[in-house]
Image (cartoon, rainbow over all chains, first blue to last red; front, side, top):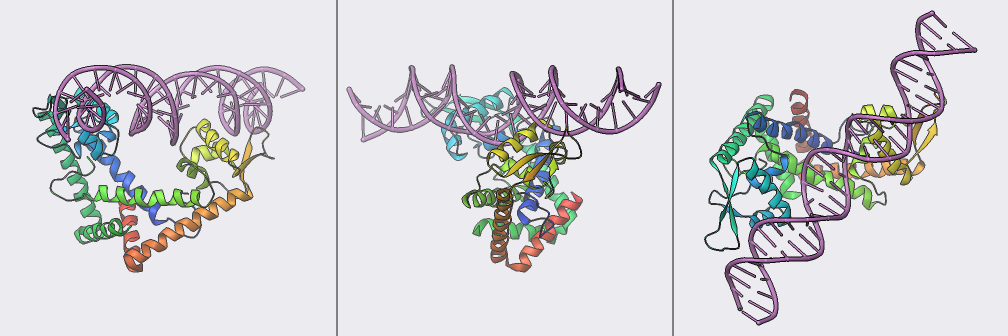
Length: 144
Length: 144
DNA sequence: ACCTGATAATCAGGTATACTTGATCAAGTG
DNA sequence: CACTTGATCAAGTATACCTGATTATCAGGT
């Protein structure tokens, strides 16, 4: 039901999906290409980890998944050298997931990649077009 | 790397992704809710099946997947009563995958659902806003 | 007409991703 | 002291694919 021939060459939802998969891939590709291997699911950690460390259970709730699943993501990121588990001084049951220097570099690479893509969108649509696109998407997200 | 706090509340790619998942879900939900159970992957068949029947291998190439994988999708759709396999009169090795009446109804439900969503976008953004959104997305897809 | 090699479909089993639930155990809380 | 919480071990589920092997049929050359 994604893109049927009839009535409209492309429906809006399908265009949104294509645009997202086109650009979304470029983010992961860019970061991996910069020397920071990772999986898309890892963004659930990067997106919300606190600079001062986050508990596994907090990350899990924030990503709306089970602590076990989040634990697996953290295992992988630890293996990749992006985070480390440190004991939480305020609760001996808990551990704080903290970014390593390399983890910070990885996030920096992510931000740089995203900025590159934003710049590219600016070039394609013009700054006004890009602003307008963002305005329309924000309106859609706020209301929908 | 989806939505980091810094620099910009939301990057454009992440907004595209959110908008797509918000609306994309509504398509499948709408069709399933109308009494036509299906999986998202089934759209690979619906999107390209010919009214006069399509060969499995043709569908597989069109969806850029192995014939075996496409065969499984067709198995499921056959089980659901949306398609049937008929011998291809022009080649006794081949079979033509054809929509049943119920399959046509399912596609009609999909089109109706999509139109409903398009109408909703019209209401949220205004017809001009919606047109502008589509124009910007088309430009992005053509160039990116 | 006959053999050869390609093509169509399918059977069987495997892989990757992204989760889930259940159970266990240490440590905190009323 | 009962109950809850934080993390983790272990195993399972769902989705969406894949490769390999087999069989029937077709199309081309001899």
